[in-house]
Image 1 (cartoon, helix red, strand yellow):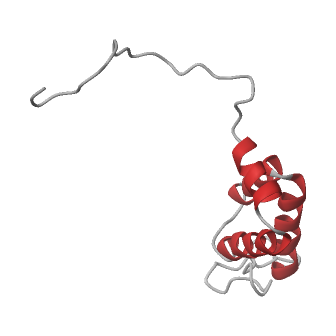
Image 2 (tube, rainbow, N blue to C red; image 1 turned 180 degrees about the vertical axis):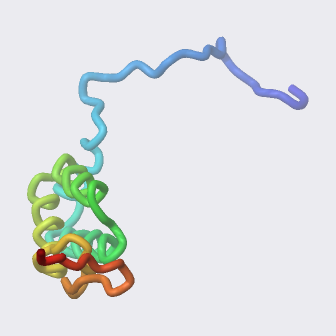
Length: 113
């Protein structure tokens, strides 16, 4: 065949039919739970936490935690815990690393009557 596709059968354009075992998180769960060692899981958690600091903010941050809990409950919880251990308590408008107000943001002043 010159300049074209070769096929042994009819080519059709149709939607993929999901199988009962298909889901969005199964393969990732198998990877982190059955393929990775505990040491590899710990490195994964450290890597994910490191990518979240300092640029990821709400609501994306909560979605990241939920995404990882969907893959593996324990890994997701450890990612969230690791993030909060590294960032400390969050103050709205504060720098996510040191918890201090961001000096580049306009400061609100209270006006006592």
